[in-house]
Length: 160
Image 1 (cartoon, rainbow, N blue to C red):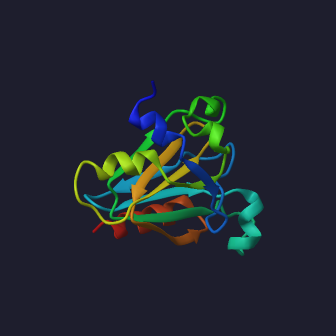
Image 2 (image 1 turned 90 degrees about the vertical axis):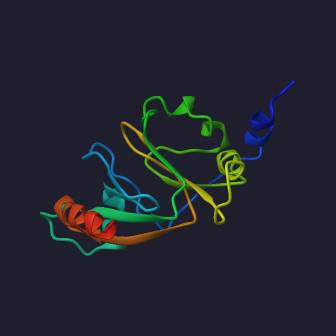
Image 3 (image 1 turned 60 degrees about the vertical axis):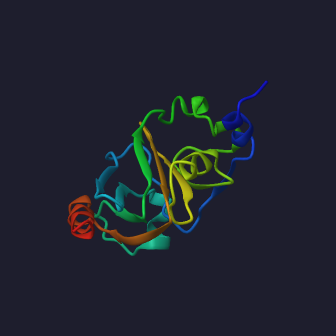
């Protein structure tokens, strides 16, 4: 007999979000700045997205900053690219170095049982050494900057 969470997990549908820059492979690690209900993630973007989100100078190391509003949950940790197949959503189409939304998420369903919250959405971003997951009401690409230092300043300014 399967548990309720196992049966809910079968409903998880992983959708690729093309409106958000893809993470760079073999680059600096992502970082999180968070307050009680806001999570800001900054990470280096894939070279394939330079033209789409640029223009950038040849010396730039472009970083993206994404704000997750009304965050109810977030984590940054394993698995990374090498062992992504162990992630519970791997069989639903989770890809490396990509940005996803999980529709009919078992995680959002589980969090909804804890207490009243705004409509929640589940986001997953995969990196070389880690995976970021966040359950929030929405996301906004705040900006794409020429360097991590600029993205860092913007991220800290957003949590004030």
